[in-house]
Image (tube, helix red, strand yellow):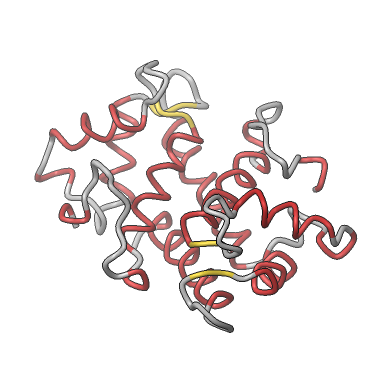
Length: 103
Length: 103
């Protein structure tokens, strides 16, 4: 398996780990999203210092307003943070609620 | 660094590895995209058996029609393939040019 394919598998594994804890195992509810943000994105986001951030991210990701984040909606977060965090693209940061300033 | 953060770093590293070979190091031209697809996505796509696939993917990803694929456009491919490839979501496959049948 290539580096890219194993990274893609990791995205699936991480989502499954957190989404399978309660209710619909294919989606993240608010507390599952908070656990994921705190457990996996500490370097990108300071959720513990900014409790409102979870609601902010939840409302931005939950495009179909079903109070849950699907795998595809989760990948939107990954895309935005990866683009923002990519020092390689210094000065390039797509407009996102999650501004790079949160890092 | 968490599993998710290292996967995100890998997405950046893989893109940089292929985009830095020729011309604009922030973008993949057609041959760089072909090398990436062949080198990194062999399990997801059978580019060698279907040469037209590179053009098909290039035209789908190159949204601003500048004959190059940016990092953000590349992540669209990663998102579609990851959602399609996620056995966890069997039966769920967002409509993409790159149908799961290619696997």
